[in-house]
Image (tube, rainbow, N blue to C red; front, side, top):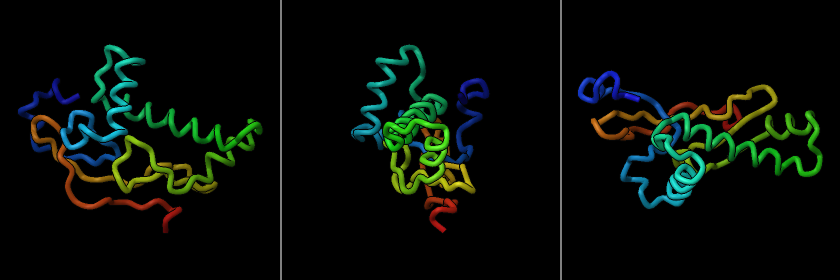
Length: 138
């Protein structure tokens, strides 16, 4: 993603993230990362597993499965919406530790917490504490 601008020109830039970075050695032995990389290799051959869109899609699919499981046999629009808008403290394997899914009927934003990260020329290095808070936690 940073290659078009040039890695040298990108070194030192800042971002915020809620997700683990696949090429960060800190996550090499993390079970969630191992499972994600295996899934990506099997079901998404040719895609860069470091692409944040792939990580987001993987995480979104896991959340969708949780919502459908909570519906049980009541797969009505109303119940899917009820389950999707009443999530609290859902931890997903590719989210950074301490960041959880929170929704309410008034606020559909599932992820409102992030960590700052700086690109070091190879990967994103996290720094600081989690910022942002979900309304469900307030």
